[in-house]
Image (cartoon, rainbow, N blue to C red; front, top):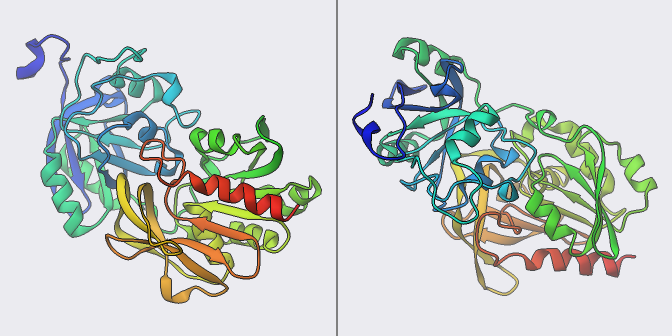
Length: 371
């Protein structure tokens, strides 16, 4: 038993290790399926998220497919979980790493605890990890492959070295819906491409339109035959440079119908306009990133989750509409001659601030102007 296992609500957990591809090793205690006979070795690309709340929405965001999420906030799981906070049909992340996972949640909304949620979803991870040291290391060395589990260090290091990470990977195919479905809503009609779409995005779109969600592989001709008022390109995981087939899909709609892209959808719009994308050192993952809206000079506090970005000096056919004030990364595009725009961050902000939700109203106005 661990020294803490005698405290009320704290579970006895087997020891485990987190090993990064560069050999850096962290001790911890296994949680989720890692603690109950799941795979002794699991791997993925390690990234950190700085949000102080909203851990269930983060874990269930399909954009984390292929990744292990390290939370910088020390207490994760303290208010439990509820089905209302799920952003997708199941989590697609590879695992989580936390400093302290409370055994007893405290919230009137909670219908269960986070560790049971992880176990039921087949997700493992580690707690009791020095996440402050881990975050400082990733900030210096960058996001990198890792492995975690209850196996020995040598086995975990070999797994981390063999893990491809997200670069060059098409991860959209593993998260997109298999069949189209509809979400009833406002008077306009939108077709939303599911590259890993979040339920909170759909709830915001439904305020302005009835939404038909289609698989990532849906042909543009099928969508245009539906005569939608607009097309939405969603967030999603992986490297946009590996998604040339989706860039072709996005390009087909330009000039045909109003377009709005978010996160991966933004990157694909940029690529469809001829821009290049690149991998950020450790990505933007958090709920407090300041972004300047260039048209007004106002600053929005935004929710972000992406590891890739559009290269500013490669953009043609569009104006840069938003800039990240932390590192000057492009955060938005507005096409000059066609009805299309996009943002890198998450205007639905689940979790996060609501400063950017006006963008859904902007999409509605663009569609109404081109009906």
